[in-house]
Length: 158
Image (cartoon, rainbow, N blue to C red; front, side, top):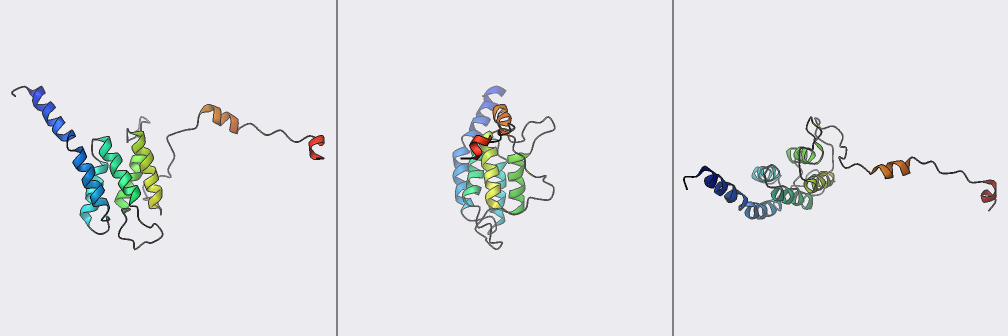
């Protein structure tokens, strides 16, 4: 079609229709382990950078499920390379200067934090300590600040 709108819409739809294939590929390649082939790390990084939140979520879920043994530094079946851990931190905790999270999808942020925790070890040096963006409600904060009443003499004797 000579219409730019139709051409652009077809292009976007074609990209969106690739999501199931991308998810299937991510799940398959994550089983191999990023330490075994550099292409695995590259594929997982691409999945975490994909525009489609379903692809990003499937990628961080795959990393979580295949994190490997965090107590074994020689484990080559896991997917916790420094680059992947850094990107998980960005997805889970990073915020823009305006205070909005870098990752717009709350489920992706949550699973990225879980995957980062499953990977264990130290965070990359340029990442500050993680702080959750999800804060407790004001009611919970107020309830936690109430001091318990001391026991009276009649209760102490019992």
